[in-house]
Image 1 (spheres, rainbow, N blue to C red):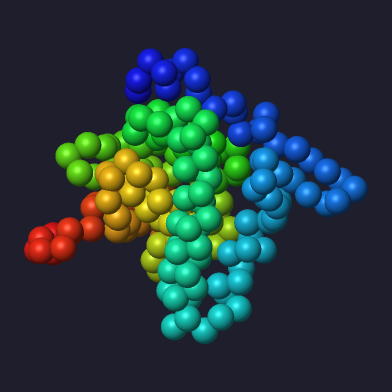
Image 2 (cartoon, rainbow, N blue to C red):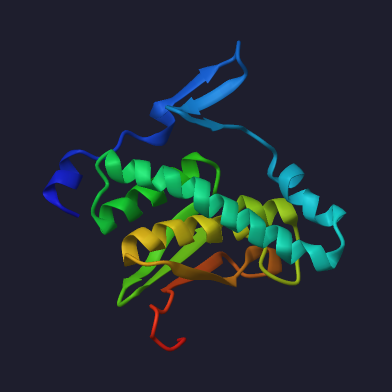
Length: 182
């Protein structure tokens, strides 16, 4: 983290929120949020044919990557410009959003590793044969692109819904044009 990042961290997420009950809005500046039960959100998957669930989780990840990435870019503009500072802000903001406790357990050497304890997506989904935390994967893809300075592919390597003690993710840079696949 640079001295400038340490001297000017963004204010905590919860302190930036404005609640407007007359309009029925929760906002962080221009970004609108909503509160929703995790089981109501993830329960959607149980109402779909099994063969559609992976596509829905992938679409959810892509949407969070695009829109959550806008939040991460905002954090950079607010003072979390250095990679370590950005990772600290993301890890501090995730639990304030109800996204579980995030801990970056490995970074550098062209990769990021994230552990999420108490993922609302895993808890909201319930037992599963495979990973269900597509939204976390999408957010990590957006953050990894900023930290690794190129698009990244993210894989959930363990999921609490599938019996793991915590959800784990790995982000690796996409090969550049002309590079072989890793």
